[in-house]
Image (cartoon, rainbow, N blue to C red; front, top):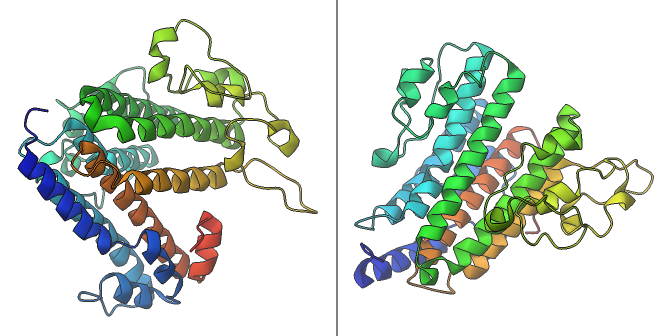
Length: 355
């Protein structure tokens, strides 16, 4: 691929391996079960730069530094390419999408200031400093569609739909970026992104049904029918319980009529293993958060297994970024749990993480 020489590919792989060795993933995850206070977690993660702050002040400060650490390490990888592959830039801008969603929520809530956002250096596109002027923030960027008259951000429901549009836009661009790479550079990334889109559709469908009471027919309109499905887009996505072949929206389409309070109704569904288990003596209800946590752990393990499979390919850099994003989520969750008085073990149990 043009712009990706053998030297920089080898350099990226060596740097990624070095950073992985210092990351709290794989065999180092059990270390996160030891801290019993935020200050102890701070000293573990930042042994040379921990802070002496009251616990209430330490939590937001620690969360900010955890994110800055992840972004800094990813930037060091992306910037190692003379011409960074679009796929890696799309992954880096995951934080920009998240910050833009937060800004939209702040606009709907009438907040006059937007306190902070993740700095992405030369790869940032949204001008968050212009908040609350949405037009000034996104004019000339790929997000101008948010200024459409069809999206009325004055209502909470429309803000939710705007975020759904953002998700669809992000994953459509991510999939296109994958397909632009030579096959030798994208084998693992293509598998992982396809799985992620399928699972995101399932999570989104569960949320809309569980939290907003949206009927299945309406939910179907908001799913991301992108990826391998394009060739057969004219056909209605299958609702079979088994394989989701043909469409990355098929697994979500298949569960739109399943009862949300009957575990037996989901038997045989292809994504059944990500559902929360039944607890004897307690009524069961499908839990979107549990599903999201289980899916996140599954995607992280896919990336972890694939990281060293093709050492000098873009696949390796892709997997590195996905692993670092998982680490950031895990560290932030542990910090938030400790801040609420939970133990690290309780947080792991909540996230379905086995240390």
